[in-house]
Image (cartoon, rainbow, N blue to C red):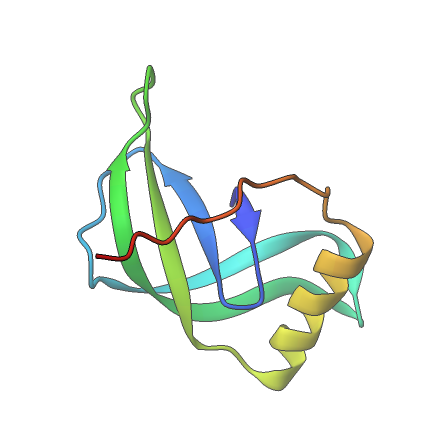
Length: 95
């Protein structure tokens, strides 16, 4: 797991994943959160491509099924463990 947000996750894997694929994941947490050692979710692959200069593939997933307890764990991880990253503002092209 590379990136995490309240809407989904970005994963890196050794195999390509086809867009639209549904996955069921159980991710080990770095330390227990609310007494839980794992984050469980189902997600849909929205995009996938080969990593530049690597043999792995990265893919982006949107959460499909995320229990309230797991959503609280995601929020806790984002608040207490996430590294802030600067992103470029999106530009909109209008015809």
